[in-house]
Image (cartoon, rainbow, N blue to C red; front, side):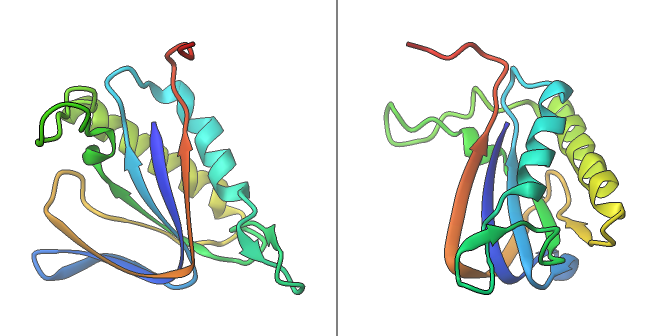
Length: 156
């Protein structure tokens, strides 16, 4: 799984002119799944995401997590994160998880994030899987981090 995490002042996603998710200060997460991914990766990635110290403390250092700053989370599915552009000019999406698996992993990721953030009273908003979405954001910093976890052995 791959997450593109952006620290935002605000972000929203709309489908067919209707807002499906909107947050203020927090993290916009573009979520991509690979064809070899499974639910076993979700706990690690959700924990890493919500405890990632990328918000400024009183001294201007990145020492605070989403929970520390009481930020919100907007999760948007993005199968193109596994686009392979190494050959030709058109990306190949052969490594991206297919619809049913990708949707299952996306929904499981959202459920785990909501479960973990419930005790902090933080909002988790989403896009709509498979929809043509328009994402708007004000990147704060800008700060953009890529988190990735795989079941595949590391190549040498």
